[in-house]
Each structure stands twice: as structure tokens, then as C-alpha cells.
Amino acid sequence: MKPIYQRIADDLREQIADGSLPPGGKLPTEADLREKYGTSARSTVRQGLSLLVNEGLIVPRRAKGYFVREMRPLVYRPQSKFRRRPPEVDIYTHLLVSEGDERRPSQDIEVSIVEASTTVRSRLQLKSTDLVAVRRRTRRLDGEAYNLNDSYAALSLVEGSEWMMPTDVARGTNQVLAELGKELVRALDEIYVRMPTPEEVRRLQLGPGTPVAEHVVTTFAADDSPVQVTINVVPGDRHVIVYERVKDPDDFEQRPRSNWGAE
Amino acid sequence: MKPIYQRIADDLREQIADGSLPPGGKLPTEADLREKYGTSARSTVRQGLSLLVNEGLIVPRRAKGYFVREMRPLVYRPQSKFRRRPPEVDIYTHLLVSEGDERRPSQDIEVSIVEASTTVRSRLQLKSTDLVAVRRRTRRLDGEAYNLNDSYAALSLVEGSEWMMPTDVARGTNQVLAELGKELVRALDEIYVRMPTPEEVRRLQLGPGTPVAEHVVTTFAADDSPVQVTINVVPGDRHVIVYERVKDPDDFEQRPRSNWGAE
DNA sequence: AAGTGGTCTAGACCACGCA
DNA sequence: GCGTGGTCTAGACCACTTA
Image (cartoon, rainbow over all chains, first blue to last red; front, side, top):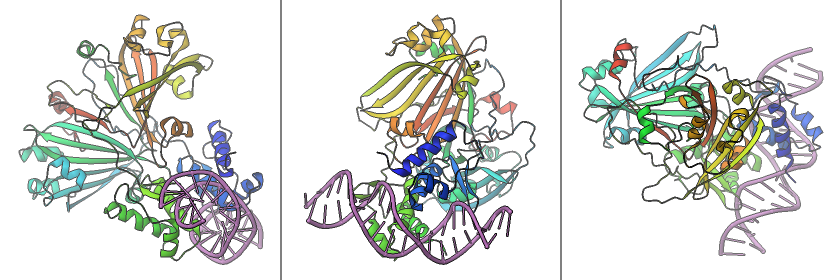
């Protein structure tokens, strides 16, 4: 026999899945559920509801009730059209534009000097005593944060340059790095999926049960030395990452058994 | 004044972050914390601990205590070397090979006929009455599940073909589709980040606080008709998605302001 | 004022792992 | 047998929203 709180969660989850509790809809109150399941200790009912909260399915609103989380406001936009040219990785195309909506983009930029975290240090191949500069950006659409974008570079490289100005750099910070003799020619991308830290919850105004993707881009100069590490953090409930691939005929010859797509 | 349960969570979280509670280390017991914070209702202490559980930082082990979650057993393997050739999207390279480990791969395959979910139906451009075949694979390394890989295709296309055999198809299912007149030439990739469903928790043996990435690959034939939808679900704690990009000189001309990497 | 969820109290019995 | 976390009881006071 399953515990009561799990039965509560299972029943409600199913009602959400089959649409009898639609997005935005109101769930029974704790008191309703207490009665319905004959349990009547609030904690048992709350335990069941908290499961759904942590799955990101419902949100409690103080003094109002529990509500089914609204569908993600995402319209994914496939990349243009079939291309002969090789697959462009069009990752983190931000797809928040609901048809016809005009949303005002804005960003905060903040630059500071810090000790490198392990993540950054290992990718930039720094000694533990080296300092790094960090360019922190919080990007918003209509005030809603949708992306944290923190770039790290060795302080010795960017000190005194425009890279450290906490303002928009019209020609791009990568151009600034090129002028410093470090043109970026290669990038290594890593994507992690995890729950957010409390700081990320605050900066991105995340609801409960919302995981994030952490996209770490390490960029290299022509001599293969790492120049910059950029850490993007995007909320799982506000993004879909989309890109398109075209089959490379060479690829087919080189790896005849490749199960492209299914693999 | 912050609630007690939040102070408990904050204090422990900090100790985990600064290493005084190392991965695999044992946390104070509920009774210890009850005493330390002078609260002494178990529920308060448990509420604090459950925050950390849902953040994926700790795991409770029945009758033993709470433990800091072990580091992800990931060794990320950067793609070979600098390439003149355009960026290959080497996504979902499964990087579970800790140096020197030999891990035995295995998979279950199960084929059935179902009604198409909304996700599948819209991508395959099916009518709601159309049936689809699904080829479900659970992939394991040393018995540990690390990937769910479910492929969907219109039943009318694959019925009676080798695609529907619940066994390994040596030449690849994509080759089977090609022989059916549907060579796959293009793919659209979407990646979502979310909490797992209970079924996914079961199939992937996920711990609490573990989000998943859902990688949806829609593949198209030369006439631009969608042929197959593959849904990969990978646990956030057992994967890192890695790929490499090389700067395309054309790209630089076409989009001079592109902030490649930082963007 | 009534109803909601947020926090907390002070217990209870159970299943499980270990010495 | 003892200590651990898992589940549950039966309340309390609070902050906040809505009527």
C-alpha cells in the first residue's frame, strides 16, 4: 500500500496530465484534500503537494491556493531552412518571442575582479594564485531575467582594456580580445543540467522545481591557448535550445554505422 | 529573521560549498540538528534538509543518515583536436568512461504501437487518428541506466519492416528507413530541461533533485517530410553534453557583431 | 471576518541497517 | 537492541488575500 501523500500526488499528477486540471487551474485546497483522503494531518497533505511543487508541476500562492503551472511561454523557432552549408550550432537562440509580441530587451553589466573558481581555473589553465576578471551580465526581456552570462578572462590579459568596461561594447568583446592579440578561433561547449543555486534562483527569479542548463563555453586562440570562459545559465522553464543539422555526405562514409539522430 | 528551516539549509549548504562537508560525507543527524537549532520538532529540521535534497545536494539513506551527494562521475572528453572542417555537432557523446574503466554497455529494446502524443504528432505532422510505432531503448553501462531513447515513426511507414524488430539492427535503423525510401538528410534538434516524470525516475533510477535534459530530434527526408522523432532523455547528474566549434570565416563576415561564445 | 498557505510544536509507530 | 530516517497525528499561531 502506497503512502497517502504519494497517492495524493499521483492522483493530482494524473489529473494534470490528462487535462482535467488545466494549466493555470486551481487545485483543491489542503483542507479539501485532508477531507478527501481522510488523513487530516496537514503535514501529510502538504507532503504530497510538495512533491508536485518540486516536480515543477504546481505552484502555491499564499492565501490563494495551489495552481497548475502555466505552460512554458515558448515558441520554438526552427532555424530558417534547409542549408547546404554545414550545421551551424545555433544554440541558445532565445526563443521567447511569442508571435507578434514585442519584448524590450535589456541587460545589466557588472565587472569585477575575483579569484578563479575551480571551473574557471581548470579551463583557463591558471595557477591558483592568478586573478581573473569577470564580466557579469543579466539579460532581461521586459524586465524578466532569462539568462545569466558571466565571462571570465585572465586579469593580466584584459586589465585596462575595454573588456572591463561595465557597458555595452559596440564592436563586441571578442573583437577587443582580438585586438589584444587573442583572436578566438575555436570553442569547446559543455552543457550541464542541474538544480539552481539560491543565488541563481534570486537572479533569475526562478520558481520551485525549475532546473537550469549551464552552458560553459571555453574559447581558444589560434595557438590553442584558452582565452575566455563564458558561463551561461538559462532557466529550464523559459528556454528551448534549438538547432539544425544537415547530413554531411562525408560523415556517412566515415561512419557508416552511425545512427544519426537515434544515436 | 529567516525561518529556522532555511537557516539550517543555508548553513549546511555553505558547509557543502566550502568543502567542510565533502562529497560522500555524512551530515549531522536530524536529532543533532534539532538540538543545535533548539527547534525540536522533527518536521522543521526535515523541512530544511528537504530543501537540500531537492537541490540535489544531499541524499538521505534510510537508517544511516544524510550524505553529501557524490560528485558526478563525469570525465568530459573534449572532441579530438582542432579541425579545419566545420563544427560537428557531437552532442550526447556519452562520457561516462572514467579513465581506464571498462564499462559494459547493454540495452533493452522494446517495440510497440501507440497513439501519438502531442509532441510526436505535431512533429510528424500526423492526424490525431494516426497510429505510430515506437522503438523504446533503455541504455545501460554496467547495468546503470544512462539514457532513454524512444524513436517514433508513422506505423504506415515502418509496419512490417526491420525497424520494428525489438533487437539490434546491425546496419542501423536509419538505413532501414533509407531502404523504405526515406533517407534522412536533415535533423532538427530541440533540448528541454525539466524535472523527470515518475516513470523516468523509475526507468533511469534517478535520485531526488535530479533534473533531466530531453533531446528531441526530428529527422527529415529529402522532400522535407518528417520521418522520425527520437526523444532522448538523459539524467542531469550523469551526463555532460560536449561539442566543439570552429570559427567559420564566412560567419565572421556575415555577422560581424556576433559575439561568438559570449553571446 | 473567513479562508488560504507558511511555520512550528510534541509527540507516535514503523522499516531498515548495523553492531 | 539501538539509532536512523519514513510516515502520520492533532493541534497552534502567523501573514496574507478576498469578500
